[in-house]
Amino acid sequence: MNKKKNLKVLNFANPAVEPERQIEAILFSAEEPLDIETIKSRMKKKGNVEQILSSLERQYKNRGFNLVSIAGKWSFRTAKNLSSLMNLQQSKEKKLSKAAIETLSIIVYHQPVTRSEIEEIRGVAFATGTLEILLKLNWVRPSGRKNVPGKPIQYISTDDFLSHFNIQKLTDLPNVEELTSAGLIDTGNISDDIFGAGKFFKEQKAEKKENIYSDIDDMLNSSLKPEED
Image (cartoon, rainbow, N blue to C red; front, side, top):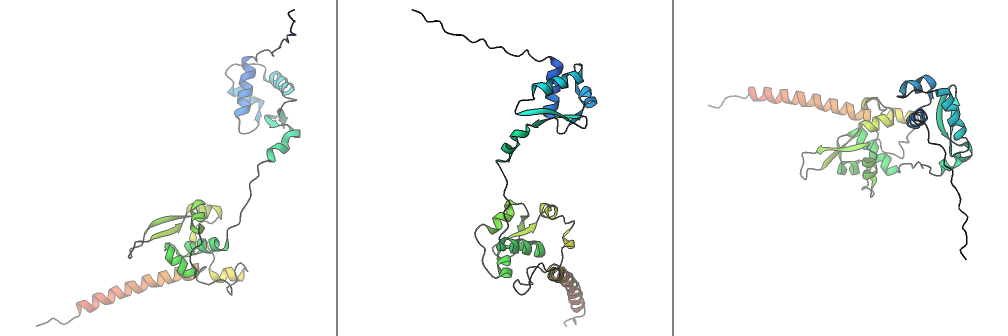
């Protein structure tokens, strides 16, 4: 005998009319809640926006996300009883190691600086990945090669470094005296050479002046040499 199978008839909801589909698309793609006038201005086919919004609000009432109106503006939001699901992925902040902080400080305060110069100032060799971490954060970058045997790569700080620490320009960095007085560093444990911005810039200026004077002296000395018979 052939057994009759119970067939279930699936009743699909009536397809949404065009204005309703447009409003759904507008609200889904919006970066912020929209008021009714803004929704109307973006629609190609006009309709009763207030009525459609009320209808959509009912349709999405028991869904994973709801259509809500706050202060007269409409947007899709995750259902309140499901909001905890959105916290499954959390970003964890990792502190930079002491070696990375010292390396970053040396580059920022003494740039351009080579790897060997950083090691010389720190007094220890690089740990594996220390410089790579700073490069990955885009706080430092290579900037040409130093004109010495071996042509080592020089490193400087980036605009991302300034932006991250909300610094307008490098000369706004505190010098070692300011850092010490603020209690941010202990010069008994950390070498002054690492945080020597003020001293470093002053030395640069003094060196430039000395070069100017030495050039003048050389020029005068060469011009005043007695002519050979």
